Image (cartoon, rainbow, N blue to C red):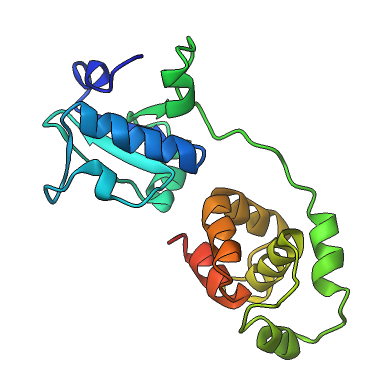
Length: 193
């Protein structure tokens, strides 16, 4: 398997994208086995799982915020080496993240689900202030979608879908932990998940 140290031989900073929880866990384990420590001197496996990390040539590592990754991704003056960890450990030839590619979600279904109950914004907000028993994961996503559109951020449907795609792991965790839709939507809207 390729090492992380091999990448920092030629780059002082390398950013990693971990598509899912399993890859984040594997990445943290690999960091630890190669002798990396967090910026505050913890073992990497003590960190919670996240999509984005940075490793440095001084053998430290840490989280990278979703916002920083997104804002710098398509800038011509950004020269960070961005690695798709899954491709890197699978020995694929092209393991560089050129841009985020993903399934495009057809939000028409979410729109139908989120607005089919006929609730006005205030009523909808009250409904979303607690976890809705029996709500499917698709309904949960649709309600997060509506919250983002009707929030103070005023996301367009396309922007709301983009935020949901970026925060899919956080939304899944929120659903499993039965967090209210409104609480989840705030984290997704701010990109803190």
